[in-house]
Length: 409
Image 1 (cartoon, rainbow, N blue to C red):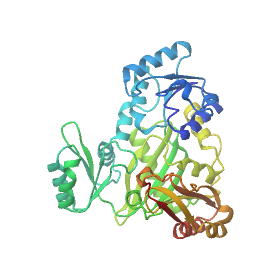
Image 2: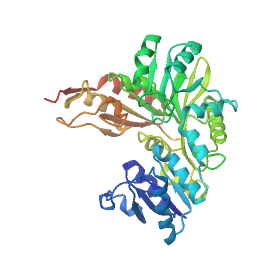
Image 3: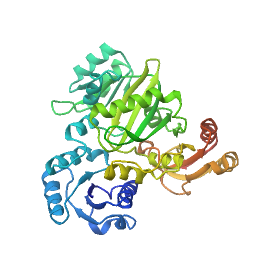
């Protein structure tokens, strides 16, 4: 099978998916923005070919490039793990007459308002939502559903540019900054109280070859708005029990209702006083290197498993569910340059070998802004066979480690 992979060079994370494709026997050609000579040394051996283009969002350019490539070796599939390119990849598939995620399904997985409308119509519980093109539409929604409301881009990534609006006065201050109009809408959603987590799959056309469940402590929006928070992403190894039965059922229903085909999905959910509520889904792997948490938790090369699903329509090995795994980030007390870390000896004594990976920037290194996500600044990744013990260690790290920075002068 010859796989055309869009944007393999834009993140080191993506190289693992390309490696997986090669290891299960696929021929892989990259189509990307970067010049060929700038490709990372560890990416080059994973590619059989690479063609640079000026704009991967230009359908004419990508179709012409793909057809030139196909004259030498016919293309069987078009894949990407980049959220922003999911629709572009679907349009390229359609132009080439190839199987995979359709344009309709790709658009639904990107447009958060249309996604929820589609799923509500099929009986899946979601927060109330609209696509709003004017301040009046947002005001009417807020008056009907009550405050707080959530306002986010229709095709955003993660929690970037997401706002929790608590009052009419706060809404009036926000509306002028949204650049609303006939060609620009935002997704406006009912605020759902409750715990937030993820349900991710390696999907095999009609069922999950693998599924994974993770939890956010605290929720994403709170974590991105307060640098004092030490956010955690924790993957459970208990999902074969009764606790997750409903979530796993709903997750599969969502994938089928959206017409998702072979590949990766990343779904977010809430559970609270109103029960289980679907939040949103992407037809791509989770970011923040969450798949590495799945890899360690399950003694499983998840990248190769994804590739086997794409190329052969099956997975190769079962997940062990041996460990729960977790990541925690400790933010510096201000933006600037790292001055020192406190509490490292204490956490090493308390957590011991459970810490399997960490990043502790050296003094003088520039800090990264809080909104850059969970895999920047100081972070630790842990594994343990008992989920509750893992949570104790993550909480201990969050209480104990302090990161002191000094302003850049």
